[in-house]
Structure formats: C-alpha cells, structure tokens
Image (cartoon, rainbow over all chains, first blue to last red; front, side, top):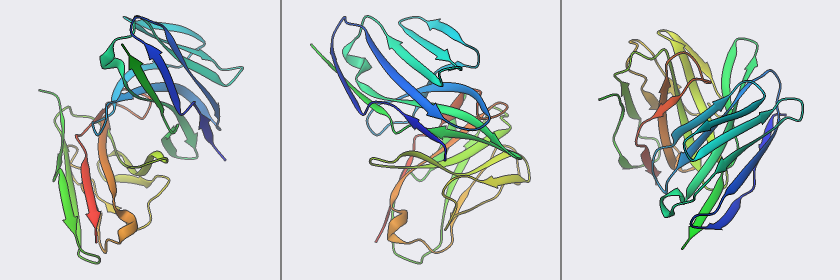
Length: 112
Length: 113
C-alpha cells in the first residue's frame, strides 16, 4: 500500500526552530507538498518539492530526498500563530489516476 | 478575490435524505477534488476531477457521487446519507493537477443522525 508517516505531535517555544519529518512509501512519486491547517479551518498550501534539495520561503523551508523517500518542513523563528497542524502530501500516479496521498498530520504547539 | 466556495458550512440531516454540497471556484482551475477529514484519519480523497466531464474515484468514494458539468462547479452528492458519513468535508481546486497549489473551501461540517 501507499503511506506517509509524520510525527503526531511536536512542541516548541517561541523563537525556536522546529523540523517536521515525513517519510513516504508510494508508487509513482511526483512530488511532496506541505499544508498548514489551523483548528477547524481550511488547509493552506505552504510548499512543494519535486526535486531533491531545500526550498526556502520566508521562515519556512522544505527539503526533499527522493533516494531516501524523505522530506521535512523546517519552521524558523517560531511564532504563536504557527500553532497548527501540518500535513505532508505526495502526488502519485496510478494508471490514469493523479491523486494526492496525505499524511495524518503533525500537531505543532508553540508555547511562550 | 480568488476563492473556493462551499455551501452549506454546517448541515444536520437524517439518514437516507439525499443532500448536495456545492463547490464553486472562480480561478478557472482544471483540477478539483473532494476530501473528508475525520479525527485520526487525516484528509482522505473522495473523488476528483481533472476537467469538465472527467471524474474519478479517490480513496473513499463509496456512498458519494460527483459531477463536473461546468469547469467552476463540482458538487458532492450523498444519495442516501448514513451516520458514518458524518464528517468535515473540503472541496479543493488547483490549476493543473494535484501537485500544484490547492486552494481549499472553508469546509462543510455534516452530521447525519
């Protein structure tokens, strides 16, 4: 089967750096995405990696290693508003299907 | 303003009473999809559509139907809702496929009693 694994919970303090890992076992991998979701709200897109390496967007960075089937989201200078759930998602192809497979999410709590 | 609009936001219904959740996007996106989100199970794709009149099953399609007669609209139909379809539902659209940035609607919280 196809699966993504990420930690269920992470806790950090304001101003710190946190890394949320995602390992995947999928067929036909086409890229790794990250989304943020505040309680009860709509997920919002953070980043997408199709190639190996680090992509930086402000305080957030995302990394991918296709050979290791692994990626991570790095959040720097944490703020209270970063408390949310973070999901990794992988695009897979299966025949004519083009789908996103989602991890179960990592709940990040940022404490003062 | 670019957006995905779902209606209704909240719905309580009874078992077996057909319902439709509407979804509309104003970004001329080709790819649209429906998800359900349940505690501990993350986001699971129900159906997706790669373009007008092109739809396909996601991971949990049983008990649901969709249609894509126009590019902007992608309604989710529950012909005979059951309590196990109580969930938070999201519609999403993206420009050209699931690896491009997806924009989500605000969600529909459905309770089937």
